[in-house]
Image 1 (cartoon, one colour):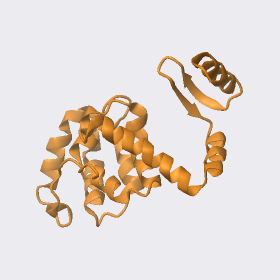
Image 2 (image 1 turned 90 degrees about the vertical axis):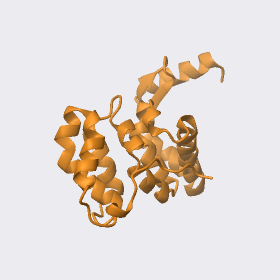
Image 3 (image 1 turned 135 degrees about the vertical axis):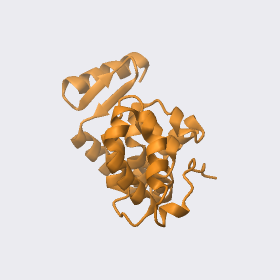
Length: 178
């Protein structure tokens, strides 16, 4: 398809409610959940996992590990989900310990509730370092919501007397995969 045909097709799909959100200027659309499920089933498990991995790898490359520079709202909101679906659980846990990632989640359209949702979904076990950080974020949510720049101070202050395993973790940028 050329660009004109692609736009015409996208508009047609949007008119039929198969695309929930369409922004031709930004070249972004959101598929209806049912259509996304059907396409995912047609891909099959391995190709679906590979597609999720490509999304995550592209965003990782775009910021070169400096997650605080991530300006794509979709990426900030869905990166962990794509990584999890790509079987990158270790990478998800590393991001949950990365202050740059936390700050990226608080930029743009994101807010502290979306950051907390990441921890609820991917670090529900309070016995893990990421789970303990999620618990600290729950306690500090109102201060961070009022001013996201409070995040580093809240983490340092509330984790100062933390018990293992978080006491043994250095909050640092997530490593780039080799």
